[in-house]
Image 1 (cartoon, rainbow, N blue to C red):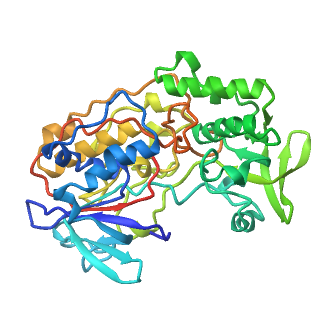
Image 2 (image 1 turned 30 degrees about the horizontal axis):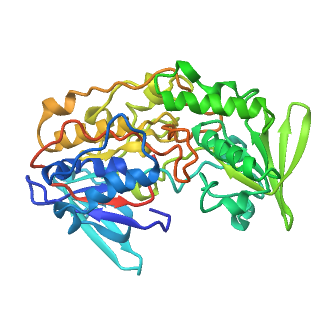
Image 3 (image 1 turned 90 degrees about the vertical axis):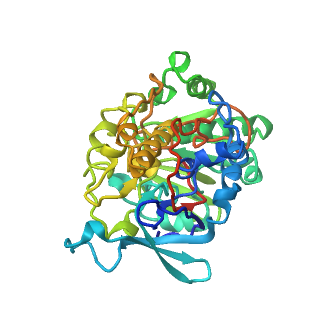
Length: 435
């Protein structure tokens, strides 16, 4: 990948040709393909009805999985996948392609490069390191890169009530975005303002009003998501949060005293001076490392072609997405799959339960169990609003708490429902995956 994030890689031999299956991504979806190994060693899955914080997810799921005897010796840390291709051929070569192993190029932090051969590749590397720009038309606004470099535009999902508390207390903070990422940050800033009354909170969205962000509230089938909307509405109605609707960012000016956000609003041009800006405008997939593969992507959302129309946020919420598995995720490059948040491209409608079912179906297909692969069943909660007018957001919110590590990317604790035994897997995984 083009970023410098540390990745992890796990290998399990393939039963058909002796080559491993490579799973890129160390998040919950990437590791879900191997969750069956935990059960074999006596590990018990967390309560499927619970909504764990990020720390709980690591402690109860990711860390125990990585420590299993079957995986520990195969996990590679301090590395990142920079390219995926076919051994000895680029994407223009067709003859013998299906019988040629994948080549996964892995770069260590010391610069060392290793080429790993694989029978199949599952890319679950997420979208965390490729946030959407803040400007209009899907482009960075003038001055945006400079503002990010100075830190006045923060990283997505800062730890407002924890490690970043001193940075935000007493400041004028602008949150940009209309999804659950924005909602979680606004709620944490609201809690901070109770202890630090000088903290000012502004919220900018491109839509004319923010009511859709409140979702179904008490009518939402996912109670934690409904509570999120209710608490946010109360903060807005009480005046704790000042809303700037119909706000299209046109540029930034960085100064010693903070940041000036230039925008277009119905009444004309508007300049808003703030100390910090939190971007919550969603993410997009980084596809550069896959440029030598034959992918078939939806032209709008950059998801697998068959999946794209079903998840387009202009037409679907997260609860209306049909269950889907290996067949719908397949590409013209047999044996390669995009899963998890990255499989949704630019669509913000992804829920963790969807990713778990994706990898269950793919694992079954790779193990030769076509019946299990095609038997895709998934019930997603309805009513909640799972879209944004700014191009995407994480969309499985954590419970409404003041825990420092809670956030929109804290998924439910479901695990793969139908483990596939006997499937050797090679997992290159990244450690900073969100959603």
